[in-house]
Image (cartoon, rainbow, N blue to C red; front, side, top):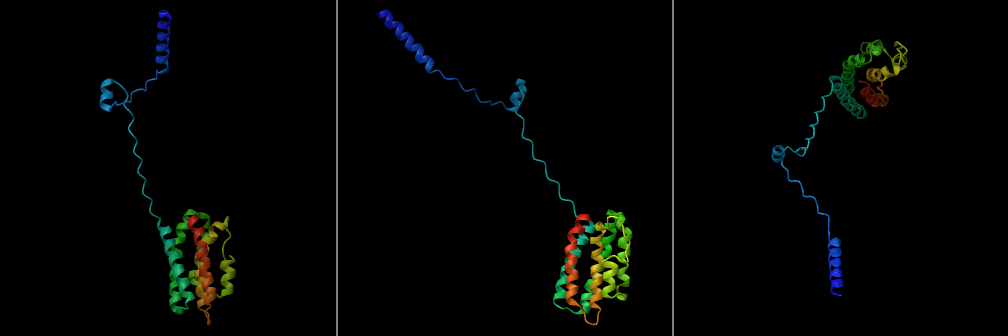
Amino acid sequence: MNYRMGLLAAACVAVLGACDSRTPEPPRSTTTPAVAEEAGVAAPAAPVPAAASEPAAPPSPAAAQLDEYAEKARELSTAIASRADTSQLQAQTEALLDLAGEISPAYSTRHPHCVEYLEAALAVRDTWSDLDHETIERDYHHDGALPKPDNVGVCYHMKDLIVHPATVLVLLSQPQPDYEQSKREIDEVIAHLGAVRMQL
């Protein structure tokens, strides 16, 4: 009897010991780069610093001129709506037309097939005073006096930056200045600016 009791007790101790056994957790690494170098162990990789973002490139001269054109066009539209003095409106319109002449060469550089077309359109700066509204519509808005380049759509919006202010000069020089149509001309050219900016 005592022998059996001894065996039973030994079995219980063995079972309890097996049930209580736990897999030990691996120790956390405390290896520093210096210790790792001495021990010949690879040190943990250092975090890579984020690359500094490059500053944005400044706008091109032509893009800056286009921004100036947009600002002057909005000012002119407001001045026309307020029925400002005709001589003041003409001066603002001529400044807008001159600015279009400065933007045009940069546009032609990007789109060489537009060179002759835009140069012909720029001639209106010197001839607008000899034109009536019907003629400028036919010859410049509808390209009656302009060459016909391939892919003229790329050239068309830049041309309008020239032709619309010239049309305003014609409208304001009439015995009865047409303020409403003049404002529509400038508002329309403002709408073309986004297309020019994409192609500039």
